[in-house]
Length: 151
Image 1 (cartoon, rainbow, N blue to C red):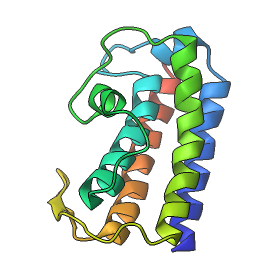
Image 2 (cartoon, helix red, strand yellow):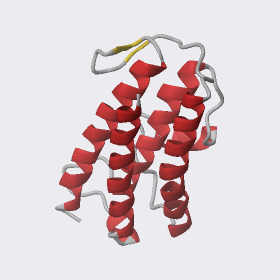
Image 3 (spheres, helix red, strand yellow):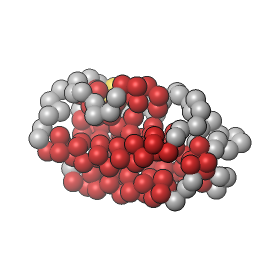
Image 4 (cartoon, rainbow, N blue to C red):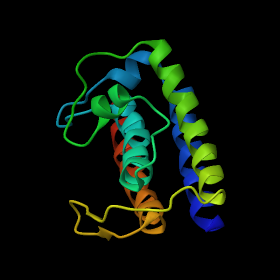
């Protein structure tokens, strides 16, 4: 399972670099033809990981329900985020990664509610969720790379 966490770590480091190398205006800009922006995609990765791994395991998530709701699938930016929110998202990218790895090692994910994603993947346990999460974050990282060209 170490490779799953190494992939997520690499992806999260890429996302942190995006945050660090773009202005607040760039992070908030929604380019023509897109329905969201850089910061929404990055925060969505945190929200989705918490839902897929923690919520479906019946374990309390490490971020607020408000955060998960704001960035869950099907939402769009409702306005610009502040620099304080960007800083919080940056912190959450790293903290949730480390906490999930620790919680997995501590074997706290004992149960799992089976879930079929919109892509048709059926997640039957936390290992499936962690693997799918890497695919999901990779997809959003690709979207982020496209958006970067237009901001």
